[in-house]
Length: 219
Ligand code: AP5
Ligand code: MG
Image (cartoon, rainbow, N blue to C red):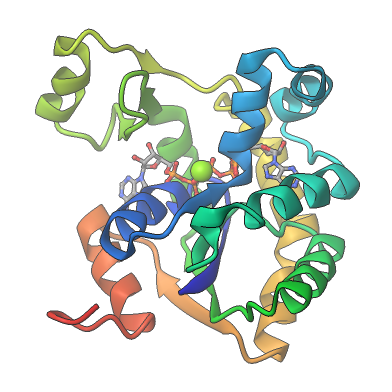
């Protein structure tokens, strides 16, 4: 399975990708996670990208093409992948199409995680990531038991620097301007499927499986 997850910040791309990755045994390729890892590692490229990410703007298409070309060439991506957060501009979509043509790995679908903008702010301001497991949690939606599981194991609940209201507003505006046009791009190529991403995490995953033709009991 080779899919792209499309959707606004906070629509649940990372949350659903992690579950799908575990079920299908294919990698989640999150460009946001890769960029944050480069920032944490203090690499030259990470330091250059940091101010862009912190402000909620997009890293340049050229840099992202390099990042994704390298990643899709890795052995674990040869049997499928879940692209989470790439492409995000029309140029990135063209670049991905060329790259997948070269690799002879056609895309199966682009899944739009469809959720009203009013819900996103609460999801994003409440998001925390467990420092030990990388699990995505939320101070408004996760149970106390889930939050405690991380803390009791000695982990911390990390609050992303770009998850504050001002930067979130900009990320949503950037999404509308630069990424939303990709909905029509994929639709016109017959690749778009849409998931109603408003509901519990489990409900959304069930819908996700259905649109991808993963009926209960099959793989
Ligand atoms: P990135 O990390 O991709 O951020 P994003 O697109 O803004 O998306 P998020 O990760 O914020 O949201 P998500 O949809 O994954 O939601 P999640 O599952 O976590 O990118 C960050 C930055 O990196 C960009 O701003 C840019 O600077 C740069 N970048 C990355 N890719 C780039 C590219 N291709 N080109 C250029 N620059 C790039 O869920 C959010 C919260 O909601 C969590 O707390 C979760 O627990 C909760 N939640 C999820 N689903 C539900 C549900 N159904 N019910 C209740 N709560 C839920
Ligand atoms: Mg994410």
